[in-house]
Amino acid sequence: MKAFSWNNIPKPLVCLAPMSGVSDSPMRLMAKKLGSDLEFSEFISAASLFYKEENEKSFNLARFEETERPYIIQLFGNVPEHFEVATKILNERFNPDGFDINFGCPARSVVHSGAGSALFLEPEKAKEIIETVKRASNGKPTSIKIRAAFKNVSALEFIEKIKGAPFENVTLHMRTYEQLHTGEPNWEIAKQLKEKLKPLGIPLIINGGLNTAEKAKAALEYTKADGVMIAQASLGNPFIFREIKAVLRNEKIPEVTLEERIQTALEHARLMVSIKGEKYGITEMRKHLAWYFKGMPNVSELRAKLVKIGSISELEEILRSETFKV
Ligand SMILES: Cc1cc2nc3c(=O)[nH]c(=O)nc-3n(C[C@H](O)[C@H](O)[C@H](O)COP(=O)(O)O)c2cc1C
Image (tube, rainbow, N blue to C red; front, side, top):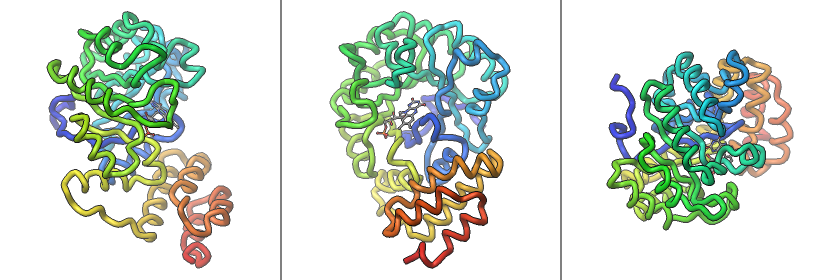
């Protein structure tokens, strides 16, 4: 298979977003099955691997199935040396198709440590981090994920300041640091960023608030971006990926029947158990089940049952029961 590169992967890209505590390997496999073109790990702390090289917690986050490829590991941190160690360890152990650096996270603990979107204020260091990851991964495709703005620094200013660093793709969360994960995304800044990146031959993926296939298509048309990334709208809804693909091909959106929803949730649950083991897999699956069935008429009764399941057979029983289907 041809090695992954940001330039040779067909566009427009439609992909699942990295989501800490959510977009694990089973969720990524479901997204992939329904149309996501490439997968990102949940973010992994570079410092955690620097201070503990045999770090099982970080390895669990990085682990993936071969069928997820192209698969990109996302790192966050604030110290180039940490990135160097983390990239080397993860590259050697997991051989991902690329590395992504998080310059977008607004979480207080992350920003307080000078990582995530706080690096908008330290462009020289951000540049050094990108160079370090590129070098430590032996030249693997290296990308960055940023925000519309952090405090008074816009994405356009940040990109200008880190120009020349070896990043080969930009994902823009079209909201500011202050907006966190909600509020109106700024399509205009995405459009301007695309114009800025175009002469550099760097693709742009847009993200933020793209919660329907039609909106994703409209945003692609408006911004001229090269792809869309979906986070919250994919929770319990991997169907969004095939819906976006259908709309981009000017086809009718395929309906999601209740039976398909049940089968998809069951498949997701089985993957959880086979990848994470029965006990932990089922616990992890509970929140996804609540998302899969959140629109159901008898939702509170159902949710009360789903959040208590202890096995796949119990889940099958609930999903097959008559009360569920009324
Ligand atoms: C629960 C959760 C966890 C997230 N974790 C990450 C992460 O690990 N890395 C990252 O770059 N962004 C992370 N994000 C941000 C999303 O990737 C995305 O940028 C954001 O949710 C906006 O997209 P949306 O409007 O489609 O949800 C996370 C978002 C949520 C809701």
